[in-house]
Amino acid sequence: MKTAVVYYSFDGNCALVAEQIKAILNADLIRLQTKDEKKRGGFAKYFWGGAQVVMRKKPALKPYDFDAAAYDLIIIGAPVWAGSPAPPLETFLSAAKISGKKLALFLCHAGGRGKAMDKLKLLLAGNTIAAETDFINPAGNTGELKRKVEEWLKPLARE
Ligand SMILES: Cc1cc2nc3c(=O)[nH]c(=O)nc-3n(C[C@H](O)[C@H](O)[C@H](O)COP(=O)(O)O)c2cc1C
Image (spheres, rainbow, N blue to C red):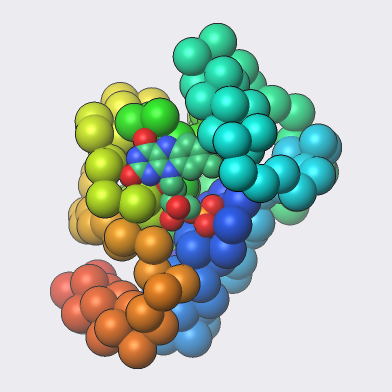
């Protein structure tokens, strides 16, 4: 089963999950990066990110290499920003036009995922969502992360 993990990660949590998936499924990793990827912290980070969500921005992405047709399973991962999947995912999904694929979805958040999973699924109508899960700031507990990712992927790996 050829698997891709397409994800965005601003602070490294979704990146850790993606690395863990790669270690288990030997997946290709496609890390989305915005053209404006400068580090921000504290209030500025939340203001900048939250404003993008509210204004429904689709930030420009750096070039990436991804062909949905090349994969049997596509795993999509996003941080939750203001109750939505982070806007770079919207940029990606509006360009990639993924349809008729088997997908698995994961979110990283700080405990308030809101309706972000439903919103992500709406962007992916026309696909089969084979699995979904979410992680609360997994960078804080990498031992638990490995166990959880293994558990989550078990049914997918068997198919
Ligand atoms: C702009 C911004 C908005 C956020 N909004 C939420 C939110 O609505 N709910 C929540 O639980 N966490 C929120 N967070 C926290 C992140 O979702 C969380 O730390 C996640 O693990 C980050 O993933 P990353 O390290 O891959 O970027 C927000 C973080 C940022 C930067």
